[in-house]
Length: 490
Ligand SMILES: Nc1ncnc2c1ncn2[C@@H]1O[C@H](COP(=O)(O)OP(=O)(O)OP(=O)(O)O)[C@@H](O)[C@H]1O
Ligand SMILES: [Mg+2]
Image (tube, rainbow, N blue to C red; front, side, top):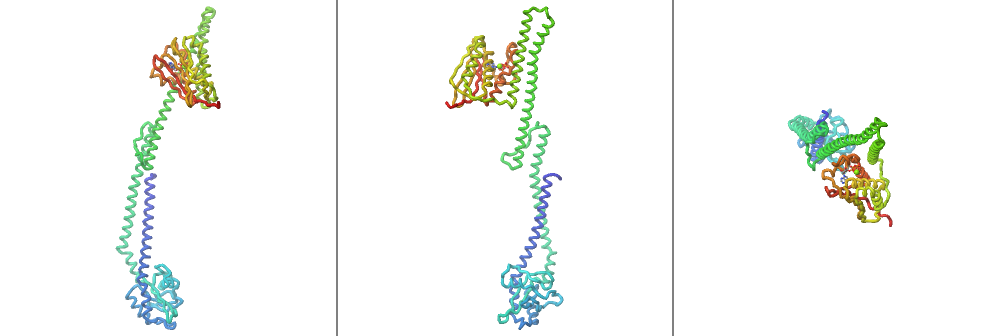
């Protein structure tokens, strides 16, 4: 019974029964008032008629004989009328009813005056002398002799005869029918309401089933409901659920992918650390075993190899450390304005010797001599070094490398272009991944880790810049990124 449908139905039943009851009561009261007003208006002339016939009070003495005669006339017109003669203070002077059935000896005059002066809305109720407490509609007229107020003629309408008749009718066919009709209407309203609620809550029930099903499956299953785009609140709810479950599903997939990548990373790291380490270990152990029997030349060669592996290990650990530092949210680049052309010239100088060794021509193409930008000069230097080092490593003898700068209205574009082997299409999307190296000879593999471009990308991310790469196999590669142009007061 703890369903929304049960609660709504209970609420509806209570409302319908209360409304039905209230309507029934109001209708009963209204009918009575309507009847009373009608009776009072219809019978208003009776009192006038009776007083107009004879002088009922002469010098304060009531003429009871005439009263009785006139009362019996009036009863012919309206059998429920009961006639009383009152003095000017409202005391009952006489009537034509059995003596012991009249319980009061005076009548409150205020409603009588109100009716005569027409200052009150009908129906006006006055005291019924045949009861201690009842009030009834009445007709009344003043009795005057020579303009002097002698008393009143007071006619109670709907006297005891009426009461008896009305009680009869209450138990009659019409009364019963109206109760039955009221009950039928209440039932019909309740049934229609229950049907409508049932239809509405059914949709909620379907939705909650679907939510439970998808939730239980760990967001593996898709929602089956397809809410219309412009629907009511329930449709909006369903829509929110569909959107949310898709998002959760995507995020779960993303989490799984991240987890896979992290595992891969850890295994890559341990592999890359172990290789130089075990090589070093091997050479050192051999030296220990051979001891004095080794020639000095061999010993120097072994030591040199062990040193090279140690250096390589140092670089690898340094790169890893740098990447994790760049990854941690606490690192923010320390921004300052600096001249890009100067930085590029410094880098060119730094690599000139290495390039000469490989007979590669390293040139600069400056489109702007004094473009300033805002950035972390140390980090941007790292970016350029990594790009130029890659270019020198992958470009064969006799190739060309160009460092270029182009000034745009709002930014400076920096590019490193080489005439190397290019990068195959399938690799381009992955070269910025950590530890990713395209197919290359074992020799080249040994002293690279695949972290260089990951560091480049991370640094440029921190500068809100994106690196793009254009490459054609056997033609060359061009890495390019934008930095904001700093317009200092000249
Ligand atoms: N200029 C280039 N020409 C051709 N291939 C390139 C070039 N630059 C990068 N690549 C490819 O992208 C891969 C990833 O480069 P990245 O700099 O990240 O690693 P790496 O140079 O191999 O190692 P590390 O820089 O850590 O010593 C390289 O292994 C190479 O296959
Ligand atoms: Mg590199």
